[in-house]
Length: 437
Ligand SMILES: [Zn+2]
Image (cartoon, rainbow, N blue to C red; front, side, top):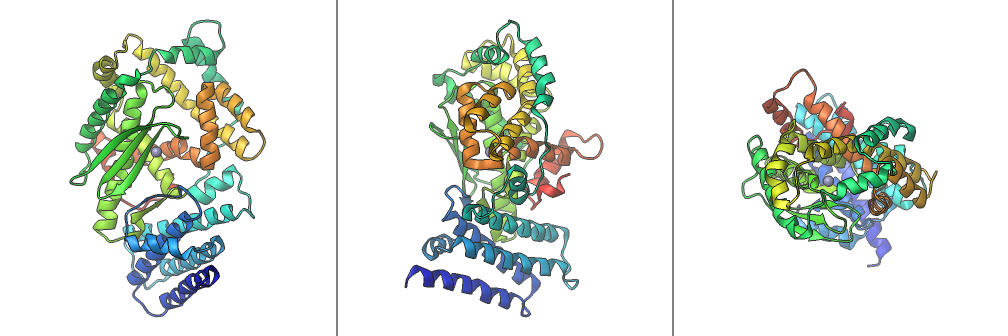
């Protein structure tokens, strides 16, 4: 059978299913079928877009079928819209008495499917998405827009904190040198950091039984760390050692990639939604989708969940600095510099916005990242490579974190235990970015 015939049959299956779905089946069966089709579409899109399927641990035959049927991007768009219509109908049908979790499931599925068609349309290339359009279409949010000049007061504060007359970027780079973990100490420092992240998370979150991970050190990647979730509560965590790694990144990466970040999030989704409820849509994680904002936002907010107040600094001074052989004498100043630099990540978003909107070229983007986000030349180059690979995805880290923080801490004066409860609720339910604020 030639490819064209196979493509037509695949689309036909969707049309038949669409008609079938509207012919008297139980509402729950219809939604489960729609969820199955969503998984098929994500896998089909993954055949066109390397890296799109970030994790998949559902039935193997679905992955094989996606490979062999080679559904076209155009048909993915058509099928995705059909399934969205089916879900919309099930949502608005007054005869269906959905509970709160089921309602979340329906709107989650519909919005994830909408992101599937948007990503397919982007790959077809007829429609160009600017930075905000990408954010809305793929991540269900509109990040705030700022001017680069808005970051000048933060840059001025940093300039005052660090003595000397040299340009700020040079002062920051020289200052940071003192906190680089020697390569031969990376493993022992990371092991200690991630162990502590896990201990702290376990106190508040019921982690899946037998959950485990492997930590690997790699080079030549556009990111600094990555969690590859393999299913059955197992993750492969990779740390990119190409650029020097500073001491504060150990806990950041341990929390972000591991506990209570990606490894925990994926493990809870698998346990609570896929295994316990049989919701197959959670066996797949499409990277360019609203799910990524929740994933990255919760992973970054997870750092202050596990180490509230100055607990991160205390632990680093007591355990990690000695392990790395770094003097903790100016650790307090280092934290202040890091907190101010953190605010500059939004300048990074603005540079990404101008670059993706084709207002500036790669060289200018690198220069602006150095000036306003205080990245050294190598880091700025890595960041432009990241934007080339992942587009507006950068918003998921800082804007995602702020949205998650706002949602977890909403209402007055929450205790630490209450914040963990709400955080773990977020990690175990189908919530969308647009419902977080
Ligand atoms: Zn991440």
